[in-house]
Length: 259
Image (tube, rainbow, N blue to C red; front, side, top):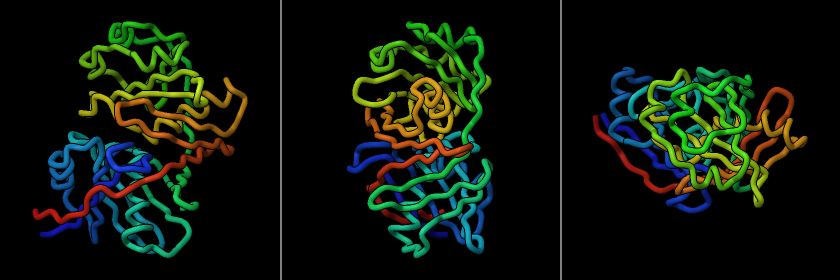
C-alpha cells in the first residue's frame, strides 16, 4: 500500500523553523497499530492522519509512542495540506476530533484555528515537577498540562530541568511561561511522558495559556512566541469560550510511504 506523506513546518514562514509535523491523508482508516508504527517511524512530535467525511474531516494525532487528544501544530499543518496541496475550495475546514469540533480558516498567508479553551485550575506544585526545575515558579496551574508561571523571561529562556522527573506526571506535559519585553508572553513545552522532550511549538498549549494571560494582562489578543530552539510565533485571540490560534506554515517535504 502506498500513502502520500507531507512534512510541514507549522507556525513558521521558513523551513527549519516552527514545529514539523507529518501529515498523512487517508481514504479510510488504517489499523491503530499501523498508524502508531508510522508515527514512530516518522519520529516527529506528531503525525496527523485525516479522513474526509461528507463536509468535514476526521483527524487523529499520534506522537511516536501514543495517540493524543489534541494537537495544534499538526492541525494547522493538516489545514495547510488540505488548502494548499489538495486544493480544498471552501473557506473553512471542519475537523472532528477527540477534543470536539475544530475549525480552520485561511486569512492571507496565515491559518487560523478555532479551538475550545481548556479550563485551568490553580494548584500546588507537584513534588516531582518542583524537583525537576532548578528555578521555582511563582504559580502553578493544571489543565491538560501543568502550567508554571515564572517571574522573568530569562527563567524561561535559560530553564534547566531534569526531564526524567516529568515522565510520570499526571498530565500530558509541562508548560512554562512568563511575560516578555518583545511579545505579550513567551513559553516552552515539555512532554517526555509522550516521547517529546521539548516540543518546538505547541498550538494546543495556547488553549490553556490564553485564558491565563487574558486575566493577567486584561486583553483578548496576543502575540506570543514559543522560545524553543526552532521557535515559532503564535497569534491568539480569546473569543468567548474559544481561542483563535493563528500561524504560518510551509512545506518541507512531499513523498510516498509504502507499508
